[in-house]
Length: 270
Image (cartoon, rainbow, N blue to C red; front, side):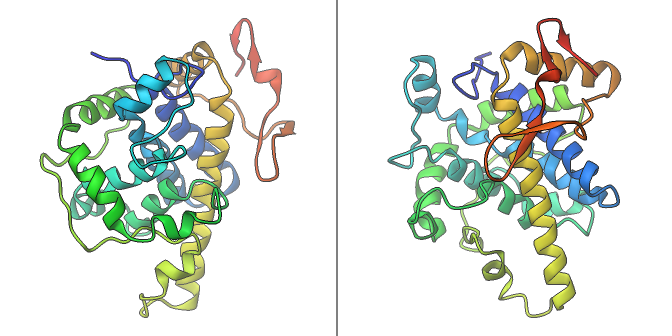
């Protein structure tokens, strides 16, 4: 079976995605301990956030040590592909039947697309404002990617010990889904049945899941493959991850990571 990579650090894509999901969930559970469904949302969003990196061009560029690009044109647009595959590969009705009622599937998809806390550039909100640009390319691409995606999700399921959603055998291209807006209010505007309290709750859930996903992705992306393996081994054998409520160091304006005491030559400290 081919080994798919997540980044220039040569982390296996399955390991990276599994650990981002697990740590993202722990981050949300740490800050919102009474919101179990929010933690589940972070786990699922973390598992799915990089599935677009199955793109062979992206994999070839990583293997060659070149700056990775995506099938959507200039600049890394892998999160658009990951977002598209969450629509193409899964049946929304089946997904909803396996999620708690308090965790809408569109919230997970929103976090997959908008895992950054701000648009990458001023054109991002307009560039993929409709599904046609994404679906046209992703639909053709997905036709030959059922097997690699199934393999990737099976590997993630084994690493996390969490059963994943069943992949649909055929590509489903419909006109019912729009790319999520950066301003969550725009996505909720047509839902007139929502009360102001429900709307605020949805936005809070999105913010928490996105924060957990971004935290985990930034943290894990800087590890070596061996460190990722150490963390996952500790999870598989003892269901333990490092305590995220520790002394932290600032990485940028909107996230922090656990201090370097977690990273050492001898492996993982728990």
